[in-house]
Amino acid sequence: MKPALPSRLVVVVVVVVVAVVVVAVIAGMAGCTKPVPRHARFVEAGDGDVASIVRAAAQKADAQGRRALVYVGASWCEPCRRLHDAVARGALDDVVGDVDFVQFDLDRDRKRLDAADCDSEMIPLVAVVDAQSGRCSRDERMAGSIKGDGAVAQMTPRLRALLAHH
Image (cartoon, rainbow, N blue to C red; front, side, top):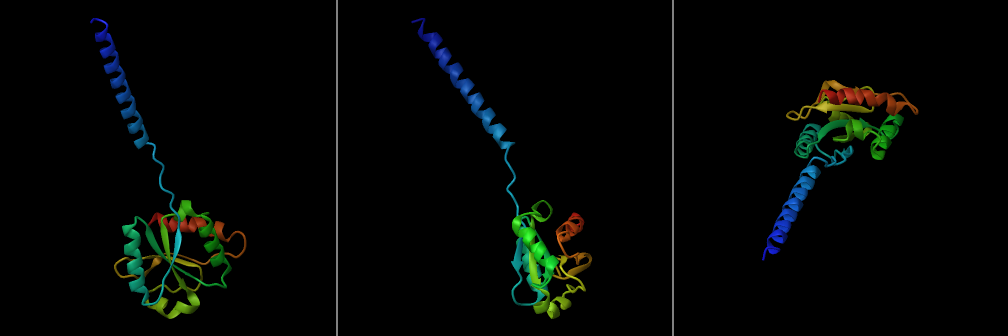
């Protein structure tokens, strides 16, 4: 009968050690989760008044832990196309990965953009919006860029600075 006691003790010790290891592994895994990658995206504005569209987009973005900015561009605008391509490739995700760009076309939407203070002499325009009024900030915006291969590099620090305050 004496040999049965040590084997029970061994089983108990093994069970306790396994339990401690399992708890340690689970606790270690909790601290090692990788953040979910975030990608900037362009959201077509659609029809209607700009303020209402932007308010709705800002509320939706906020509910998803994202930020909404107004983007005004045009198909003929080279820096606009370069910004679009960089966002699509994920090249700016470290800067604007949590941004929904509410996209307007300058040629099509000029009048309704003017009514919401989202007008600009230069494009691309990226502007912070007031979530309550749906109007573009006159102070917190990036407008225009150089043409050519350096366009995205020229816009990147400006976008970073814009988002640092928003």
